Image 1 (cartoon, rainbow, N blue to C red):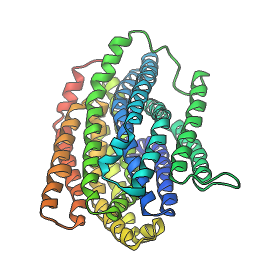
Image 2 (cartoon, helix red, strand yellow):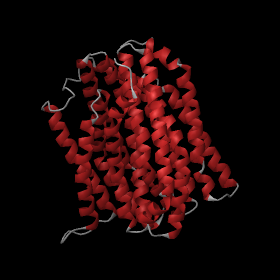
Image 3 (cartoon, rainbow, N blue to C red):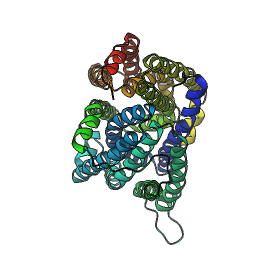
Image 4 (spheres, helix red, strand yellow):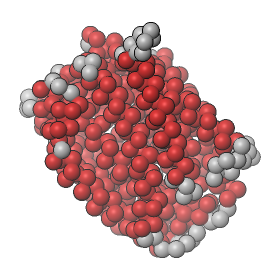
Length: 444
């Protein structure tokens, strides 16, 4: 393979950035619409989205195995095996998504009650989460398609999928939540219905195109050697999936601590995270590109090229995230006032944005380098780092702060501690090249 250049990284990454921003814009639009209904509605949507992200992140962790194997075989010019693992991923992880969604639908009240909500916020959160879980498998299937396509270097098709899904989903969100003519406004429930039905329509269309051979990813039978190949996918993907469970569990625990300060800080954190997600997805997009490039270089037998690809991806992500942090820091107040009129919530949103802007360069390091490690198949070390960081920054530190009865702003600052720990340890692992030596001993 040719050496990785900054231009080639940007060429691969910009469609992924735009497509991920589109998905985040949809979540942000839901919060904006909910903001017109009051703080309880914002709290309900934030809760429902966080619970859904738990499922989404879990499957995404498993999909790191899809990126590693599909990318490696594609880099080795073994297109049939790359397509085989893509098809197997679609079958296996979609089934897993349906199972987890069914379990979530069996205990919606119990899951929502983890946040300690009450009154209208609790009732609306339960309703929002139920309908989100119903359509979650469709969204999961879209994720798997996108990850497999990006692993072979096709980042334009996922962008087109994102544009179509966003257009349909936003239109349906407005229709169901606000009503039109004789159709009643369904409020928060309508937001979940709009997103879910839009995703279902999109993924049905994408599946039809794939089966008709219209996508760059060939259609193959996933059944040959299904036990052995399933074991390979799971052995690589399980640590990353467990890492995502740990991370999302830490976030849920953190939000549980946050509810003790009232609905205003909770709603503000949800709005702040959604606003920053528009730039955070940049780091996530570079993580996908880093994983793709590293897996393809290793598949081609180019270990030095894999290391240089990971390093250059990180530097490119760092500079872009730094610029984004400066822009968001200067725009904090106008954005907060745009999202909601409640002055107390606005104050906390501004504080959250300021703190998260400090985290963004660290996110660039952690996301991109962790993506490179996962692309090589080294999913265990990032998992251990996440477990350590979550335990310290999301559980122990907040408990100490609550015992000291400090202001909620200090609780927000634990996010900075989280990314300081993860970026430092992940970078140390990458520079040691132990992950590279390990992957070279495991031929395809």
